Length: 264
Image (cartoon, rainbow, N blue to C red):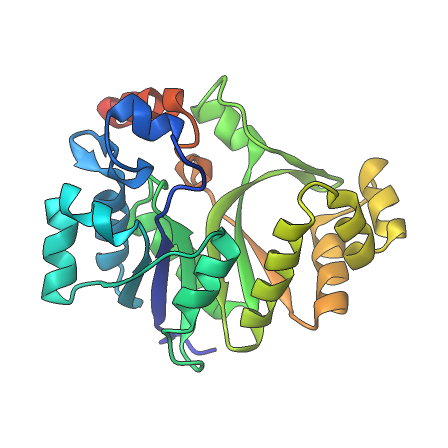
């Protein structure tokens, strides 16, 4: 990849479940429309992407077409061609697969979600610069858990505890043509969600699983194990932004992100 690599951004925007708690709290049709500092989350994400010079196009997967009129600014951007909207499927992996099918196979893709309410152009640019310099097929944004705890004390996060640190995901990924093969692995992960250790053992191997359980596994070792099984080279990008690790999963997260923005 060269320093001039550009990206097509894909944003997953459909609710994962009916009666989403965030949507209910905000009294909106879907979570993506929940206002944060007076602006729907989805618009905040789209603005951050549009302000990043490496992002050349934006594809929005979901929300359902019938709900779009409830966010007039989103309808306006779709009508003007600023973004391309496609209908979502019944799972995040299938939605991602459908959206990626809209992008030329030689174009590198940035994948994120509509509930990334604190996403900024600075975060996106940092991630894409680092991803463009990486010699791999897929990059995964990660943030140190200690950084998140320092900025957002009390915020509970899923933590990946490894020998070289404790990390949280950031819902930021890039894929090249070969990297798109990882979407099929993601689909299998969803199908095995009630039996996750079966998939983990099959992909990482039980030696790696035991190393993880006993605190011996590093991030590099974990990703090399996945790469060896999938044929996709994966690299983690450590982001120095606590905000990169915050998404709006629960109703109380709305207050958290509002409070954080008010302090700035």
